[in-house]
Length: 426
Image (cartoon, rainbow, N blue to C red):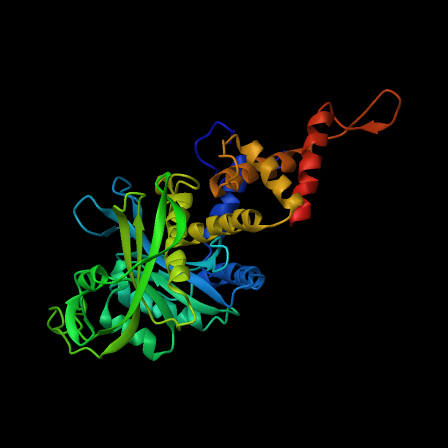
């Protein structure tokens, strides 16, 4: 690993003067393929850290952002139980992740749950056995119920993209008293002021008030917010198949569900609309529409997490190992958690530690912006490998008989000063 590498290191050998690379690789292989180590056991430290990290947030709510991403292994024919996800070349695994985010700052804390689906079934970090494959929303609803049982210490708000605009699943979550914020599909119909209209038509008729100025694709835009109560009464069309006939289940009468419609609209100085979000939520009225829009904006954190485990970090789709994919994902998630902890840390000493680690990575950062997670991850990889080597490097005795460090004293002093700053953060 060098600063010029485009990717941070994944699960590799930590530089060592005492072990060979082959010995370390064998030890990692035995650990990952040990059936006695369950997914939940590997996930327990992440859950514990998530509870510790979110406790420092001043907000009474905590956000759990849910989304899925395909892991492409189309050309890796030895990968076990690959799944054809859509078309013939879309082969690999489906990953469903749930990311805990601070509702006050929008910075990620830890991935609470991950579910990997292959041709054999669903493998979840919240349970040890393999379950039968489910539709995306059925599996997500099950994971949300399990997450609520973890007792994170905050009131959770589950944020889902447009796939979550399913009346059956919104009703199921609401009946359990769970809170959610979902981006609605503008073509779906709702009742508003006694009339049935499309969600987009309701949004068109609302009056907007500009609340703030935000950055949108490199330029300034005005953020306007409007909201209204709507009632969802449409029938439910589950994607499940009947176990006996194999056919899709017929449409079922839906229960009426009263929710808040929060519409966030971006416009330029000339009044042209640049973008619009139609958000549905059952969170109490004390949540202002502007904060709800901000929460949905932070949904992008999970896309950054997928980027971190793919092209900008651990490069998961280039892994050559045949098995234990979810175990490896859990371990790289722990590395992401450490980088996020450093990114969230406040104070002048922690800021110096971030700057120093970012310099080690060789990445360039924009001024006035907090150091990015990929740069911190890459810098930590270089730091830990270097410290491991320096700690094991032999000492020699000079002609005067006193012991002195090897001729890398200046390098050691530089790393020690930076390490002291990092230890202060920890």
